[in-house]
Image 1 (cartoon, rainbow, N blue to C red):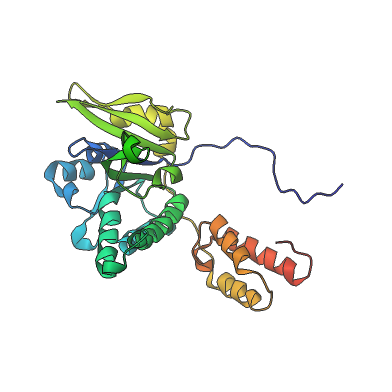
Image 2: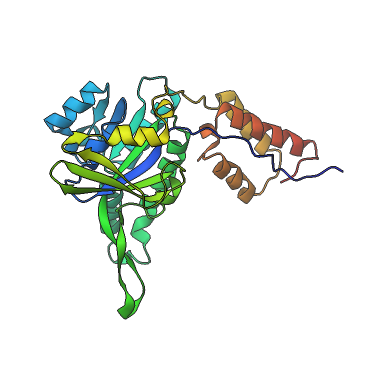
Length: 304
């Protein structure tokens, strides 16, 4: 009996590149840890990574740097850099955004100033959240390790008189941790001794609340410990660019949409599923899939 069910038998899924957020108090060592990842392309929103010892480490690993003077503390700049990294051939293996706190909170502050007295019900957060969604969509397509560096804030729970601090977390978009595979809380315990605690994880090698050393007796061991858990071969694999939809594919999609009547909600679902903002953001394979759906609807036997 024919069925319209679309589920497929489960298959073994190999890990892709690491996508994580690290957070700590000032001086905790989050930037130092992030720069241990191979061939880092650093988008420095604060200018902190320009210090000599950071630059020396970045140079030794084959990385590169863009900072505030280049426009790094701007969401559109960051998103454009990620798009380019996703679609061009290059030797970089890791993207570090340091810090996501700076660009996120700066965007909110500018919008709050623009709105003035009209800033109500979180209105000033909307542009920043929209940009975060765009950024995450491209990060999910990017065949690179991605490390979001964030400041640390208190996490509160309860209401009224029962409200109290229940923990700490990254100072960023509240859904960032849910969009990534891993969130690590970095702590400096003493001189030469730092650890990372798993705050949130989808990875078997990183059980929640587990802890591993980043620095012990003054020796950096963070990347080695992380790679042993995640899989060094996956982290250090060469990045492969994605191939975006051709102009011809985009033009044909738009032409067919002028003929076939499809609800906007359905179109939005197609784009969301593809992690795309526009048809031009689709890969060639995704565009081919959309064209197949549109052709089926044009012939009168497609489903929603």
